[in-house]
Length: 215
Image (cartoon, rainbow, N blue to C red):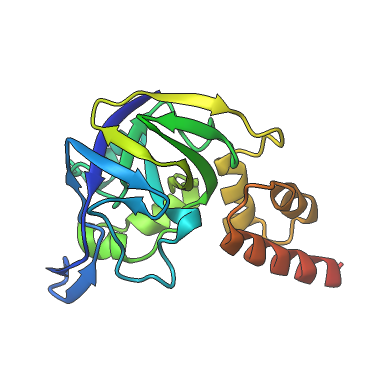
């Protein structure tokens, strides 16, 4: 596991690829260091607080390995933190990391809480249909809560502190969320994770109720 990019940004108005104006915090800029609190990195925030941010979603991480695929697919070279992530890291793909896993990140400690649910702000920023591909592949990145606050530098070490005992990868949870919403056992596996973000617990719980009612 290796930290590739550390990035933050406060919301600002941007011109989208289609020439529209949008206020968003997605345009992260690489930095050398930032203090990570339970609310997220200092100097970082989101514009749409209904769908983004919060204690369960304080940090966004995206696997560096996916960049080569998107660059080839879109015929471009994406900028650092192109998907609005705070942390771009290698060796931490959705297939390798489980919801509930705990990692040390510099002086801080973070815990994976859910897969990221991409929104069209990504497409508006990049000008490419990234959101559809992210959902199809499950290569969405994921979100974390902060268990211990601390300083994070761009050359910080990322190490596994504790694996979640349920062993449900982010990719498995993403597959259930996006493609198999009627999979009762899959829904139950995700709901059994104590560390699951509250928003996903509500959504998976409702889907389980509907799936059981339609059996």
